[in-house]
Length: 359
Image (cartoon, rainbow, N blue to C red):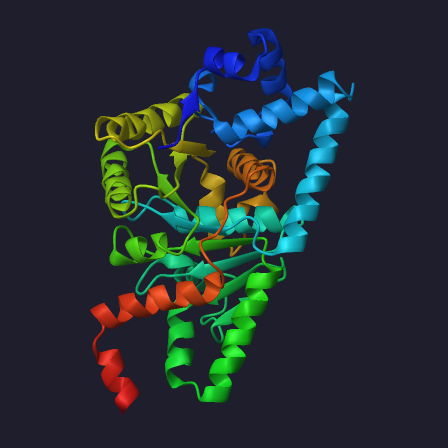
């Protein structure tokens, strides 16, 4: 279970007075795993304490200015991420029901991360309607069909269609399979982040992807029914793997207070059944400009970067990019692991695929 500390507990553990700890939180909060919507008095993890202790030494013992330290930390993050490949981990975006805006949010977040200099690969795990591929096909500026199983956009974001990838693997010769494997490993090595869209609502995909993803990000809205569905997904995932890392984003909130209420409902329900404190990555404002931009085949973060939604997405991207203790993926070769997870789902729900292979 993830241990979290109150301000007084953290102060005692670090050997600092509360005034010093508040000073560190004021200047270095963005580098912590603690959620932007979580009560700051109850949001500090052991990883957060390690970071705070480190920056305290830099301020107190080395006499460095907070602005200088922040710049050094960002530079360090960029260096680490570029040297290791996929240091941001595989982040699986799920939702308890359709209509939460998960796919639109994921695509805008990928563009926002790319605009900050990070290489993103988006993996469309949908096996039917919904998902990133369906979203892009329905936009006015998109082509009617995404060619092949891999496509790189002008933004630098790479898109992998899981369903098409599986079709290619099923029909590939031995040499073609080796080529696909090399291309997947290449994406893995180049990607700072792999953002996975698990498709519509609750499905077996969420469970299978949970086993090969480093972090599950549940996207909900402020609707009470959507919150109940999100809690059901979180409980299902926790039952399968109690150690799985689950974070939340509240989408389409009128304001921060409304977003906090939605998060508190789900987090409170989780506490009642023994699930550890959920992490809140942030929230996105209800904004008509998102729908207007998607209708034109644009992303709000590029077309209207000063809009409320774009600013919220930018904060989400900064949070993910600035985490000093990025998640560590489970094993190696996440792209192949994702393809295998999709194969299991498709073969269970589409037995005809095996018959087609035999033909």
